[in-house]
Amino acid sequence: MTDVTDPLAAEIHGPSPRQLLKARALSHKGLIFGMMVVLLLVLVAILAPVLAPHDPYAQSLMNRMVPPVFMGGTWEHPLGTDHLGRDYLSRLIYGARVSLMIGAIAALISGVIGTAMGVAAGYFGGKVDAVVTFLINVRLAMPVVLVALAVVAILGGSLTVVICVLGLLLWDRFAVVMRASTLQISRRDYVAAAQVIGASTPRILLTEIMPNVFNNLIVIVTLEMAHAILLEAALSFLGLGVQPPTPSWGLMVSEGKNMMLFEPWLVLIPGAVLFVLVLAINLMGDGLRDVTAPEGRS
Image (cartoon, rainbow, N blue to C red; front, top):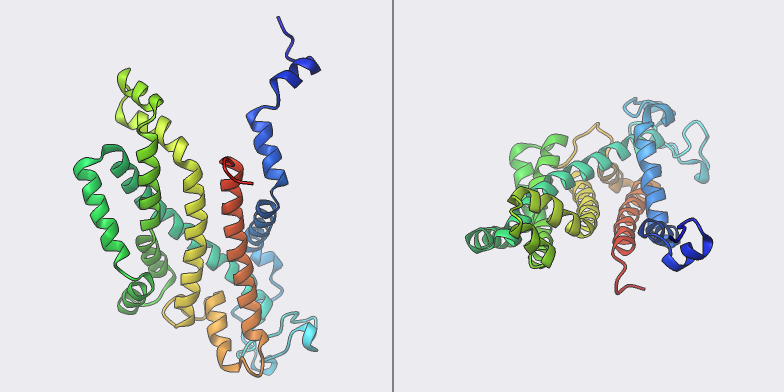
């Protein structure tokens, strides 16, 4: 019997799938950068009460429009203050909570809806597929931004309303991708074998279908999370998203737009952080797709 601990035997057998996955992950620069940035911002959001140097809601008209340190300001307010004298760094830190929470919860809601519809359509086919395809077409015919603006304008802007609206509007990509993936997987031999031995439908869906479409699901989750964050920023910028005085990066851009020609940092700082977060989420999603399903990719 061959000793698997022998170096020659290990060389013959080659690295395990887990070792290959780890090696691909560590060599993917986009994945590493994206995960580090997202993890950093998550930690900042969690530790906001500890990291924030001031109360993000505290106003001081005597200290309004203080410039950041790199523009001649003081270290008491490293990123300056806004038009109400609120510390910009503190509001930026607490704003990470709002953006990440909206992105994560909206992606979760839309992911559950879209995945359930897509998997059901791809596996059962027939009338179920026809109904789901019709709902997808109806959803694709509605512009997301315009519908979100209309609904939020009617119901009123708030954190809860924005999350619910985005979660109920961003499921179409999940449904389309999951339907196509499930159609391919459901025709494989191992799914047919599970059906022949009498496995129940829920068991087949959970043990045979879902593990094999999970790679695609990861990518869509990250894309829709970034999409939700951008939509929240757009709604807040238009005054229909998160309402003052709640710290929000989109709201901070909106509040600073009137002074953009005189104090550009009021817009550039939250805009730059928003850009970095969305870029990092997309890089992380694309990297996870490359690592978990690297076939056909360089």
